[in-house]
Amino acid sequence: MTLTLDDFDYALPPELIAQAPLPERSASRLLAVRGMALADRRFAELPDLLAPGDLLVMNDTRVLHARLRGRKASGGQVEVLVERPLADEREVLAQVRASKSPQAGSTLHLEEAFDVEVLGREGEFYKLRFPEPAQALVERHGRLPLPPYIERAAADADEARYQTVFAREKGSVAAPTAGLHFDDALLALLAARGVVTAHVTLHVGAGTFQPVRVQNLAEHRMHVERWQLPQATVDAIAAARARGGRVVAVGTTTLRTLESAALAGPLAAGSGDTDLFITPGFDFRVVDRLITNFHLPKSTLLMLVSAFGGLEPLRAAYRHAIAQRYRFFSYGDAMLLDRADLIRDDDAI
Image 1: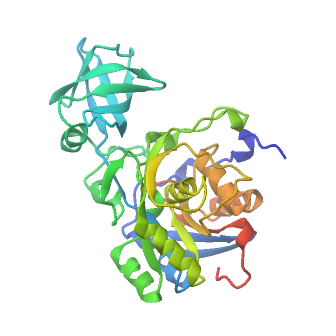
Image 2: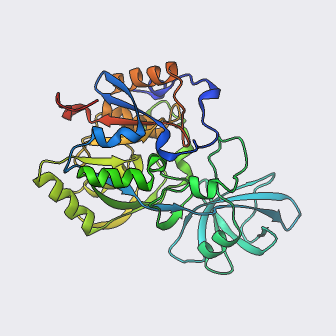
């Protein structure tokens, strides 16, 4: 069966798009999906759904204050969203919103604090040069970039709640949102249960919010994102396999990191750029279970989870979630998905 963009569309009532986090991180709901079997749980019950010896792999990226406002030399207003820092620490790729596109060689005055030079275009992004190391200036003067479907400005509470409690490595412009449900108390309960944790890093780009715009999925090109896989995590995965535990990815970013690192052969530590686009039919080599939020219609992330859990099970799960008034997207509720080809009858759900 040839799938097209329309196979990943669904109607979502706007009021189900979560506009703010719940008071407690782990108070969100959790929809357990094992094939066509569904169970409504609470995220705080996650330790009951995992087995001693399982391995949770989390993305430890930290969200930058990547949104900056300013003006062109002509006086026109601009908004810059840093997509990713480049090898030269003063240069970045960024989205620039302005009434007229800025030209190469022009300058933008940002946050009433400093000027950046427009070096030119690279596809849909602009290459900008900052007067000092870009990441430091962005962190000092920028604003937290909440997703476009959250219809309010970032508040003080978002400074903590739009970061995971295990965020360490600065470099993302969007949070790895499956990790937002974990708090220190839940991590302690998981450890007491005998669940092991490990980390990867994938710096999430703004492209994570972009819908696919071509009917033929083979024509879509992913934005490039930077990942790093430590040797300690490779060793933890091998140890989990040896003791019969399962590898549980916290979020699609973690899954893409692990599967990208295994594309060329056995899983090995390293770093690189990935534009891996996962659609149904993909051969998963590393991840056994996936914790994820609910994703946008026609998005690459919805295609990924459909590849992982099965197209029909995911359609049924989304229909159920809408009917049961789950909260959607970044500050919304979560799912626990079993990989379609690895479903075990003895799994709790």
